[in-house]
Length: 265
Image (cartoon, rainbow, N blue to C red; front, side, top):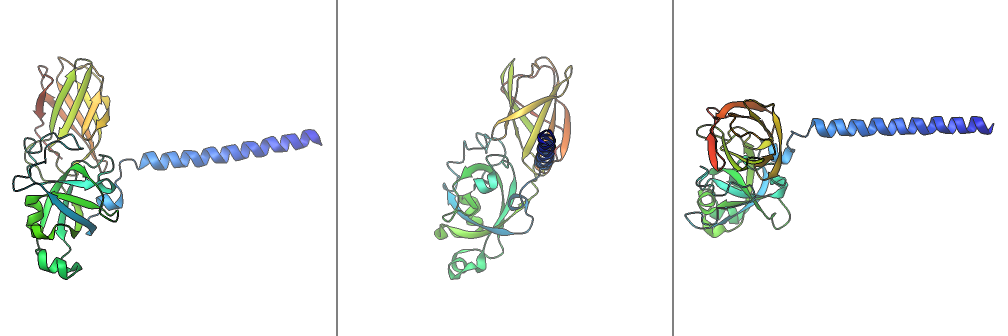
């Protein structure tokens, strides 16, 4: 009897362990299978609620630098059409480069009807991190020129409606490479479509594809030795679309330089 009890106990333990393993595997598949997908709040194409403020003056002073690693958005081609957004939308940098249409919630109150411009909206690229709204809501800290497209500067802080839109950029996607022969840091920018990078691979003409991991913002790093090889890049966007850009830099490429592909998303 004791031997039978032990055998039955072992079978039960094995069954529980197998069930746990199957559950764990299903969770892993679910998580990894959807790692490229954006949350509804970020990817929504219908308008949702947020708040907005502004910073700087007419020249958008204070725009340089920022959480996403673009350094100077003016030299990167973004200009004043940028914003710092709360981490509820920026997702620790995963959504750097994403584009949003923002408009004042004109009918929210007598205050907004006084200071907001009805029917006016602006489209910005997320290049920096801002604090959340006063009550923890999604928030956009716009440049002064972008804020004053949708409301009077007197308004200060306004309720807005926002939605994700496709990014429209001039020219090809661009890659700035810094580092040394044993380490490469690649900034990806001027990206159309989704605008944000969720994965990057790099390939030398004599090498296989090398996986890069995110360093910070839109800066991606690899320890592959790729000197004296023409470089190609494989970019996965926020919605999971992957596109290859072949021979973006020739074999004489140098660290500290920017290379532009002949196409974009």
